[in-house]
Image 1 (cartoon, rainbow, N blue to C red):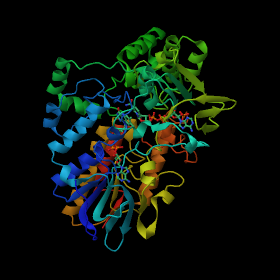
Image 2 (image 1 turned 90 degrees about the vertical axis):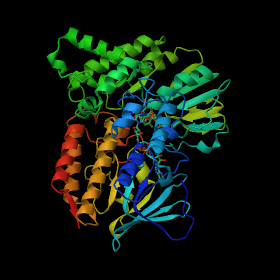
Image 3 (image 1 turned 60 degrees about the horizontal axis):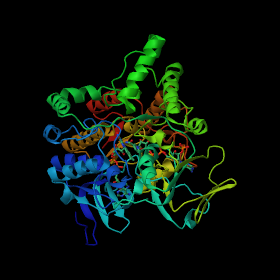
Image 4 (image 1 turned 120 degrees about the horizontal axis):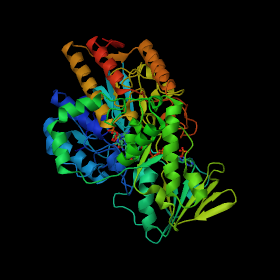
Amino acid sequence: MSANTSNSPRQLDAVIVGAGFAGLYMLQKLRSEGLNARVLEAGEGVGGTWYWNRYPGARCDIPSFQYSYQFDEKLEQEWEWKERYAPQPEILEYANHIVDRFNLAPHIQLKTKVAEAVFSEEENRWSITTTGGERFRAAYCVMATGCLSAANDPEFPGKDSFAGETYHTGRWPHEGVDFSGKRVGIIGTGSSAIQSIPHIAEQAEHLYVFQRTPNYSVPARNESLDKDFIADIKSRYPEYRAFTRDQLIAWDVEMNEKTAAELTPAELRTECERRWELGGLYFYGTFADMLLDQDSNDVVAEFVREKIREKIDDPVVADALTPTSVFGCKRVCADTGYFETFNRSNVSLIDIKDSPIDEILPNGLRVGEASYEFDALIYATGFDAMTGALDRIDIRGKKGLSLKEKWLAGPRTYLGLATANFPNLFIVSGPGSPSVLTNMITSIEQHVEFISDCIGYMKAKNLSRIEASLDAEDDWVDHVNEVAGSSLLLGCNSWYLGANVPGKPRVFMPYLGFPPYVEKCESVAAEGYSGFQLS
Ligand code: FAD
Ligand code: NAP
């Protein structure tokens, strides 16, 4: 995993930015096709999300036997997931296993942050420069920089004055943190906070939770995986995976084929209770129209609200923790003992919905007239999702056009894979693709295979430039918006809409519907990459 120490740029067929699940598979795929490809990764290790997010309680919320690669049958058979929802260390171990198994390490350069990527129209090549000044030239540049990798660091007045320890869940210290005997403040109540709060509360002397918006969370019901269950899945993995790829969100949520209107009140209740017992994100499958029809959604939302209220002793705290929005218009969370944590005497909920944080103080923070004192402050404030990691690189296409400027009013892509005026640049899980609305590893594999097939096609036809056409891009953006508009997903201030980052344009970024998306990509490829200009 060594760096290039000479002054001349290293010549490559493809530079891949990022060593998460997207970058690792892209590397494996392009190298297996005979390309000289290299991964540049800012972190000191591979795994992306699972390298950075080491906060206590971090684990996946899609069952591990689904949240894993399916491109290699032997890998699928040999890897043993131990828990229904694998914890972060196990997923990280899996990422490292991929590197070893496919001998990827020599082609991955760690501690290498890409600062700039510039397209040369004369040469049809990308020039990539790192923050350390190292340079690379490549025919193709693949951004595998992640949808949830650029931390959101809100600019509170006085932020730098805090004298205690400060953490962000997405940049958690590798050696772990011991909060024993400490007063701790945590800002945010999204998935990362919901997973970590029960653990931190067990250690801390006192935990202050600053909540702007309550979230729907359902018990994860994590458990050790039964050997017979796994043997059964493994005996029919290809067929099972094919079934999951046919699902709206690319994983088996046991989707109910009936709409809420087709069921009697007693049947609605039974189905909600069944989902509650199944746990976690299986709630996405409660009714076929749950994300499309307000009445259907209300049934689920009210059921989960009722369950939340039952868990909390203090009715005022219960009210504050009970969400009112559309169920699922923000990513639903899966927890283990989250709401029960607020019954502890060493945990205080501070509702900052109507009175936001005014300033960070050297020893705590102030909300209106009230000050809260603590020794450590945790930002569980999420990510500048989908566009943040790309915006943080100076990416320049034809005529020096900057991607950040092109996307000032919101990201514009063709299929979330490419963007007009940026030839030979591919994005894995870009805005406009199903990505964060799916089992992401399945989406990543589909993108990687599309990109590698496309590069193979270019090679076979002796072509050197591919670029999304503006018309195809405009049509695709309209379609993404139209699909989102026909759902209930626009109904709250979610990070899907960029609403968590001040000043970010309010645009629904992911595409809802994995199967129609795959069908579209397949027809684009079959038509010789329609919507792209090739030369
Ligand atoms: P990432 O894993 O984010 O990797 C991107 C890599 O690019 C990072 O290592 C980053 O350091 C690197 N990078 C970025 N910019 C640069 C640069 N300029 N130079 C060099 N390197 C750069 N999805 C699910 O489907 N199911 C789950 O259960 C689930 N749980 C999640 C839990 C957490 C805590 C988070 C934050 C996300 C979760 N996700 C989940 C989404 C998760 O991000 C994806 O599933 C998947 O891991 C993304 O892989 P990736 O390779 O696309 O991106
Ligand atoms: P998040 O869902 O965006 O939550 C961030 C929290 O910080 C929200 O409660 C937000 O409030 C709050 N916040 C942000 N800025 C704030 C400000 N200026 N003042 C006060 N509060 C502020 O981020 P996340 O929890 O890191 O999760 C992001 C995504 O990663 C998830 O949705 C999920 O896709 C993935 N993830 C998955 C898991 C898992 O279970 N496998 C775990 C963690 C993360 P508002 O809601 O009001 O904006």
